[in-house]
Structures are given as C-alpha cells and as structure tokens.
Amino acid sequence: MEIGVCVKRVPMVGGRIVVTADGQDVDTRMSGFTISPHEECAVEEAVQIVEREGGSVTVLTLGPPEAADQLRDMLALGAQHALLLETDGREWGPMATAAAIADAVTRRADSGEPPYDLLLFGNEAADTGDYQVAIRVARALGLPVASGIKRLTLTGAGGGGGAQASREYRGTQETYDLTLPAVVSVKEGINLPRYPSLPGRLRAKRVKIDVFRPDWQPEGLRKTGLRLPPETSGRAQILGSGVDAVPALVALLDELGVLS
Amino acid sequence: MTVLCLVERDGDGVADASLRALSLARELAVSAGGDVAAVLFSGEVFSGDGLSGDTGSGAGAAEQELAAFGIADAYLVAAGDGYAPAAWARGLAELAVTCAAAAVVAAATDRGSEVLAHLGAITGQPVAASCISARWVAPGYCELVRQRWAGSLLEDAALEATLALLTVAADAVPAQPAAAVTDVRVQPFRPEIADADLRVRAVESAEPSAGVSLATARVVVGGGRGVGGPEGFEVLEELAGLLGGTLGVSRVVTSQGWRPHRQQVGQTGTRISPELYLACGISGAIQHMAGCLSAQHIVVVNTDPDAPIIAHADYAVIGDLSQVIPALVAAIRDRAGAA
Image (cartoon, rainbow over the protein chains, first blue to last red):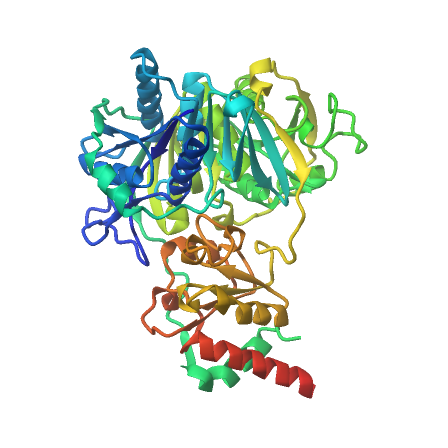
C-alpha cells in the first residue's frame, strides 16, 4: 500500500491573530508553524495503515523552503518519504495547488515508482479553509474522492481493492464505497495522532527530502486584504475570585434562566 | 442575471444553513439587478425518478419557506437516487448553462462545500469558500468578504470568473426572509448524468444518538487544559447535568485523549450556539473560540485574569475550577433542596 499525504504549513496562531501592517498577511514573527489539525490525523491514518498492511507513506507539501520543517515533523511520526513542492513564499490558490499536486502524482507514476493507492488530505486547511484541493486533485487524476471522512476501512484481500469511508451527516452516518486508487480527505477525530518518538526524530533527520519547484499560477480569486472581525464583546464583568464568587455565579445562572 | 442557490433539505423543510445561503445569494443577485433561483435535488428526499412524491409538487414544505425568501423559480433536479456529490455538481453545471446563470451559491456545509468544489473542477472556475458578503461590481467581477481561520480573520477578495462559485459561512450570515412573499414555480430538470458521476454515492445508516447533542445544547459546560486530567471532568459533567446541558472540551483535551473527539468544541470539532457557555480552565485559543462565539452568553472560570478567552466573555470568575465548580454544584444542590 503506497500512500501519499498532503499537508500545509500554517502559523501556530494560539490565542490571537495579528495582521501585518500592510494588511496582506498574518504576522508570523512571533509564532511558530505547524500543519492543520485535520492533516495531522491524515498522517496518523496513513502511518497506521502502512503499519498494518505494509508499504510506505510519502508526505507532500507545497510551500516555502521552510516547509521542510513540517515534512521532518511528519517523518518523525512515521512517514518514510517526503516531497517538497517548493514555492518562493507567495500564497498559492487552491486551483494552482491542486494542479501542482496532481502533476507530482503523475510524475511519480511516470517515473516507474510505485503509484499511490491512496491520497489523503485534511478536509480543509486551518488558515484559508478552501475545502477544495483534495477534490480538484481527484478530478484532475480521474480518481474517486470522498471528503470529511471520520472512519476509513480498507476492503479486499490485504487491503487491496477498495475502501469504505464514513462521515457524520445530521445525526446519521453516511458511507462511501471507493475503488482504489482513491482520494480521501479526513477530519480530526478519525484517530488520535501519536507524538513523535526520539528514534523517530533521529530517523527523520536522515531522510532526504525530494524537492520540485512548480510554477506559480494566478487564479480568479484574489485576496485584496486581511483584517480582524469586529470585537464581539468587551472585557468580561468579573464576578469575583475563587469560591467567594459562587453566590454571584448562582445568581447569574438564575438570571439566565438555566437553573430549574 | 440568475444566481442559482443549492438548497439542502432538513426533513420536509429547508435546512437553516441553506436559508442563510439564500440570503447571501439574494444580496449578490440584487447587486446586479438579478434573481435567485433555488436548486433542490429530488433524490435527496424521494426514491426512484423522484418527481412524484407524496407532497404533490415534489418540493413540499420547502416550497413555503422558499416563498418567504422571495424565490420565484425553483428547479427540482433529478440526479439519481440519494446523494452523489459529483452527480449533484454535474446537475448544477448543466443547469447553470441552461439558465445562463452568472453564479452558483451553496451553504458551506459538508455537502455544499464538496459539491461546489466538484463544480469548480468541472467548470474550471475558482470557488470562494465561506463568504459572508458578496456583490458584483462589473460583469464577471465580484467583490466579496470571506472567512479565514473559521471566522477569526476576514479576507477581502476579488473574484473574477465567468461563473462565480461561492459557499456561505452559515453561522455568520443571518437568514433574512424577503420583503414580499412570492409564488414559487417548481420546474423539473433532468441533466445527463454519466455513470462515472454516480460512482461515489452515500449510503446512509442510522447512528445511535448519545444524549444531549453538543451542537444544539441549550447549556454547554466546557473544560480545557485547566481541568488537569481525565478524572477532573466528572464534576463538570455533574454540573452540566444540573443545568440541563452537556459537556464540551477544548482541543488539547481531546489531543491528550482525556475525552473523545466528539465532545470537542472548536474549528476542527463542533460549533456550538447555546444560551450559556460556561468555559472552565480554557485559555481561549482561536481554534476553540471559532467554535463557541455563537453562544449568547459566555461565562468563564479561569485562574488567569489575562487569558484570551476573557476578552470574549460576558462574565468571569477568577479562580481555580477544582474549587469553584464543586462549590457551585453544592450551592445549586442546596438551592434545589431548599426549594
């Protein structure tokens, strides 16, 4: 089983987002970087499948040279190979991103390397939330795709032929039968991602990251600026400190009508 | 100038998220002097060829809601049984050509987002996801505002496209009925659906419901890192029970494996909109706040008076939840006993 997992380097924004003075980017001078939560689960899912079925996991990202850090983090979690689709730091839209990923998948198959049986994505990136790269990649490659998946089971002998992918829909569960090769985007909750081990980190340092530099393409949706939404509320009214505040808290709950 | 709006059902009626999408679709249509036409899929409710359900016209109770939202034209598209995302997108693509539509709008639900992504790929057009407003400033040129970071950041954007494709951030756009009620003309539409478009389709199966649903709970008692470990949630659950609510937790709690992911409130968990959110030991990372800002009242118990969540809260108690919450539970029990 050959699995490709696509991840995106995003700022670790914590409690507060700061926009740069020119209003064009998130100010990342004080933040670290990570990948989107759904994608951590995509990597974990891929690693678990390969631990069970054999094969290898390749983690791919499109981003600046520093995105190699996120690839190393994923290698430390158990991926075997990494591919960086290196950019000059400009923001790429979902159409160009999907085209570059689809090209990379095709190039791999053409080069005689074993083609991917499964391509995993996070359902949407934490920052831009475009909800479309996985589907555009699948359509470019002519592969079946399911998105928002919270349970994935391989079917057929040795996990060969297919997969059953399920998600929640208004209190029910809906299941999709997929023939492999296929594309699946997953959501957090499909598994509980592991933490990297020390041997994992050491192994990750030694893996050679393949690099390819695709050409940036403009697209029809263009950011003109970023801004913070208007404040929803001012600072809270402080009811008191510690257990001394409990009578005031009870009075408040009573006023809000939640005490029966 | 026609704007098509994908309408998802909820039972016999229209899903709330789709009413909100219709409201944004109308704002967009009005900016160019156009109209909104609703698009429903017969396979979502009826089986077989789908146009002759029990409700006569096929659109049923949904029709009245569409009338209240000023919809004059609704298309009932037959794109196979049940839900197949690629088939729905194919139906929308063909209908957009037939009506010479200038835009297709859908709620940013699981289904709306994926159908529009397929439609974007089929038509070679960009998709602007999670919009909160949009208007045309010239033919083929929209100005819009969309959410990033699940609404913690806004993007002003320009969309240049022969067919504008937008999804609507449902919790940020109010559902606004039209000034006048219309008569809805429901027309069947039968697109050419290839077998390949039906290859991936949903098979629904019931899932047992687990008590009060987090998404719709009236009261949510939240627990975060400050709870300290898996054993600390018992008293929060007890409090939630006393308030007729349910427990919600932050991402760190589910990442640690202290509680299951289905209890997570946040950008990658459940979005809640209770009357009261009582957040205990939660610092207020934007990942969490994206899931709870629709709460009517946020009350915080936290040891840190400078925690980011306090800037979003209405009321706060500065203190250790392991002391405050048991005392609160005891006080509520005493009160109930005395009554």
